[in-house]
Image 1 (cartoon, rainbow, N blue to C red):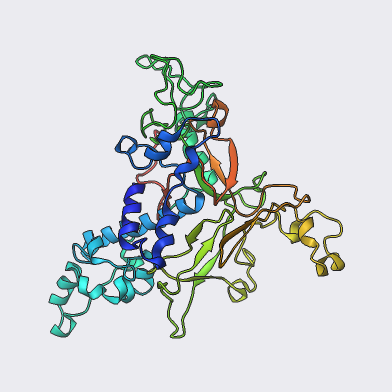
Image 2: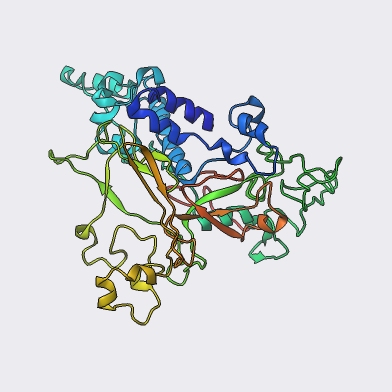
Length: 456
């Protein structure tokens, strides 16, 4: 799936052209994550991403930002296919051969101003819905297209990374703990029981996931107790949990969307808890319409490790932070960036001289913040990229607003980490050989498909 994404990106935004080079290179996984100073892993470095032998293996070497951008890409490609299937656009409209960098499909841009889709050429891809509706109207309407709206019910919600709370709930598989309205214990991992080996009669003794058994033991004893993999294993190699989800423990750990803090602030919010909200709105141009990103207006960010990645792509809607007009007299939020709400910003630091005006004027308040992680500087000049490490001896933590949570154990973790309750953190701009991701989608409407009964 990820190599399909790379193929699409390379085809639509040729990296040979200077304007698009960072789009493709920004999507590429870091295959060098397999290298180790004292390890012979060059085979994985050269083969893991491209070789068909690893085609059904979980993708690794992707940072959190790349995972989020893949979810956005998948949202657009799936909704584009849905519109073609439902007849709002003609068959073949989503073909890569008919696209160029300035005419890609974006779900949000389509819903906001469909006439700008495909670079303003959407009427050339008029589907059968328009043809059917025009037959019932005057001949003057023949050239008019019919566009899907959110009220049409055919546009799917976005694919996204799950929140930490969602991921943990899904991994735990509480169905295995329930008996009518009673919740039983005795479940530490995503499967029934308290052990990592199967108690099933047919599979008794088999490992239930791919993890590190002990020091230097990445597979288990040869034979029936072998877990089948030294590094990652093919997806769905092990039984699903009680929710029917595969690989919710072991194999690879997974990015979730939350910004990391040592303590979850569920006293402030216990409904759909999530730390990481950055609220934005559509950027409005001089004509009073939502601005579509072009090659000239595309923004590219230089990450702390020097990697250059596009913030947005041509065809998408330009976004800006919400301002005081949107937050005026609101009680539920008062600014755009809420990643450090109640934890880490100046207004929530635990210092007696928090409002010391002299320190504020001298710029010393930053040193008194709760989370003062190193700030590495990356810049460029005529000689190329310049990287400057933060060598300050006043830093007390590695936590900041760009550190994300990842959950679940991996092929190189001991059994302790495959407990769904465990949590760790890693900078969002860095990648490893043991962190991958999966995506989720919010269900619109009722949370249950059928009526409840005593047995459901």
